[in-house]
Image (tube, rainbow, N blue to C red):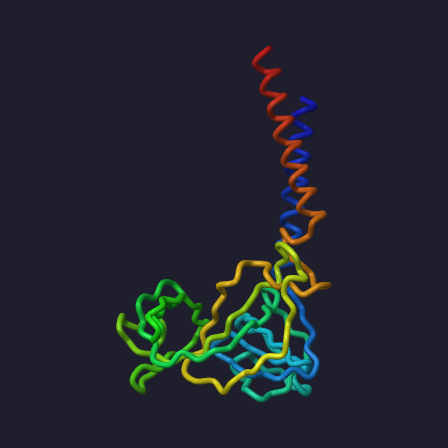
Length: 237
């Protein structure tokens, strides 16, 4: 009986740890000072910080941001706006590595909120289309589900990296980026592995804190040992 109580305690501890991390991940507050909005598409926003670094984040529907004493929604943001506010998002902002323009890419397939495009160089690439994003095809605006194979589109692609720390945070050094004028639809390239490029000193995700990760592994190992012992005793009995 004591072993069963121990197992239950360890399971409850593990669940609480994971739940606590999940709750924190649902509400991420980031303070922006003298940041400039450079791109907006649907619920996605790309801003340039005062030091030239660029970040991308998604603002949940209905959330209001205070700018110059006025509450606005993500749909009221426009390029060139100065952002001095604390922004609440569901996930941490992502660092932007590069911004590139794809001229007349060919739609190959769309799945969910993802779009696969064949570039003029013949390479297939998958991008995320921001929620509510509009795509212009032959002068007509379309939603993602209205696109058809073979459609030609032009897009400004923002390649990002997650801030979830998996591996060395020093492997990526954010730098000032050139942000060309937007052409076509804004697409998000999230191809980088989660955790690549975490900026030192920023809060990591669930698996990014070494102490938490080690503790979870220890709890799982202890659970396994106790369950095996309990099963052996039951067989002997």
